[in-house]
Image 1 (tube, rainbow, N blue to C red):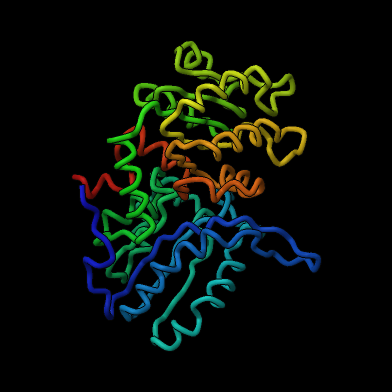
Image 2 (cartoon, one colour):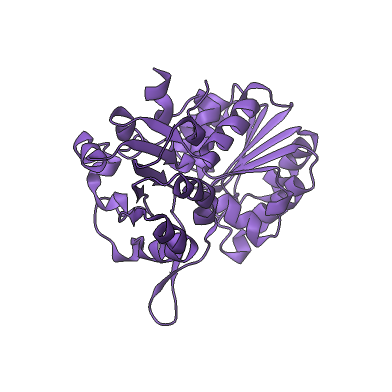
Length: 333
């Protein structure tokens, strides 16, 4: 399936609703102000933003979420610092082009976003001409700004979204084998995805909280699935590492989503570090996905050793498991 891209539409004098993934890590500075720790996700959206600015639309309204406020206004999860950073990067261009550019506050402050409220989607779409989705990281979520808007406006996809689609489509259809899937982290939905991916991957190596969750014991009975933790459950143990090593050395494709343990704690980062160095040195095609995985490998100065970095671990796994995404279902029909 060919996805409609930015070059397939004339945005001049149009009102554009742009969904980005600006879910950046924030911290409080010594003066009590929120500041961005890592601007990567914003920087990755600039190619699409700059392209749209050059097209001279009448208006660009940006939508994004940040964190998990659960339908409540949480000041620490405000997108205000992101708005300031965007103004520094594109403010002059926007003013020179005479475009109205506005970043809407955190979508997840409204419980209708996660509930995929059609009422909220209609409110966002009112008066707009076109919807651009450049938020691959949430393309697996059935949310109002991901699925709802595709029912109401002509939909196109940004450069980063299209690149994700192309790389992962090729990976899913024609992987070099053996394929080794490294799963870690704490999100339970990976268990259900792993159940489907067992039939595609040659091995599934598991770390993090996933080893302890309900559902994994059944999954772990499969001969392809391997994983065990230290007594405190915060890292993979030596037994797991010893089993992982020969499998990873034979791999031709490695897909990694989620660190092997609580890597932010030094004593629980050994597993992630050992596996990270092994993956980095592998000649396999190496793909990682998810913010925590990226943060962990960046802290180890190994991120540049990866062949492809997906912006969303959950979306990446969902697509590899299903061959489609909720954000695309309307288009496929």
